[in-house]
Image (cartoon, rainbow, N blue to C red; front, side, top):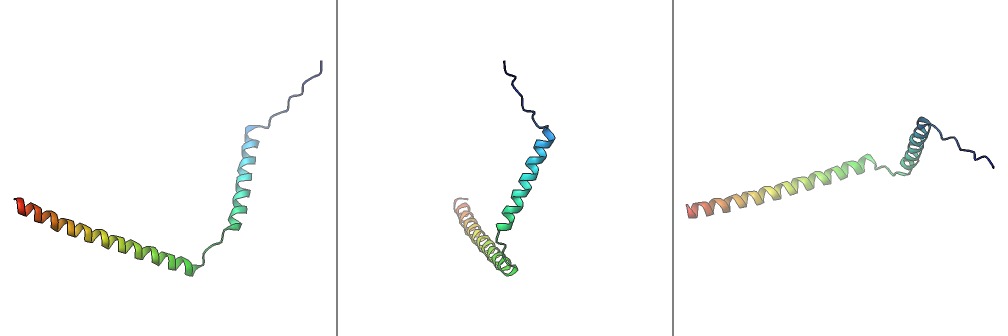
Length: 79
């Protein structure tokens, strides 16, 4: 009968360390592909987001104000 050779499995630490190294190598490769925005673009986008937040906040405040007036009027009407 022919002997069956068993492949020796690498230990857990070696396998895990190899996966970690591969992950960071691929991460570095992907980060090189990223097109980072310029400081001017970041400032512009931040301003747009801030303006939208203020606009939505004002809309919610107005809706709440009108709803409160309507509820107070209904309570005054039936009280």
